[in-house]
Length: 90
Image (cartoon, rainbow, N blue to C red; front, side, top):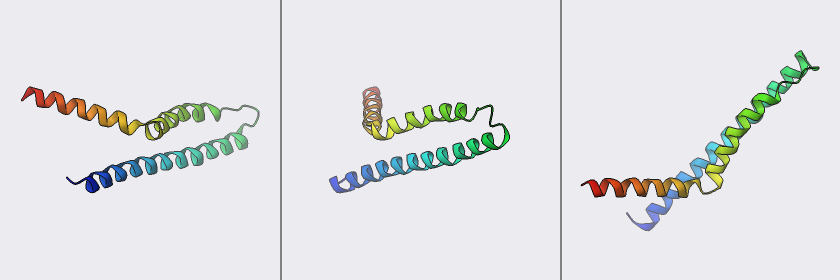
């Protein structure tokens, strides 16, 4: 495979990861705004909306870490390690 083809494949994969995170972030914002509104309209004296927001926020933070803190590099290293194991078994 040529370098340009490999770089394009890598760039496409990284762009897909970032778009996936942005979709996740948008869903998080919309759903949690809805939960806040429901909480505000039905029981404003008892705030509960932040519990699902915090739980989902942990998952969102993990997703961000994978996408923006070299998650791609970790994945590539794991793939290379598995390929090496498979080559040694042959």
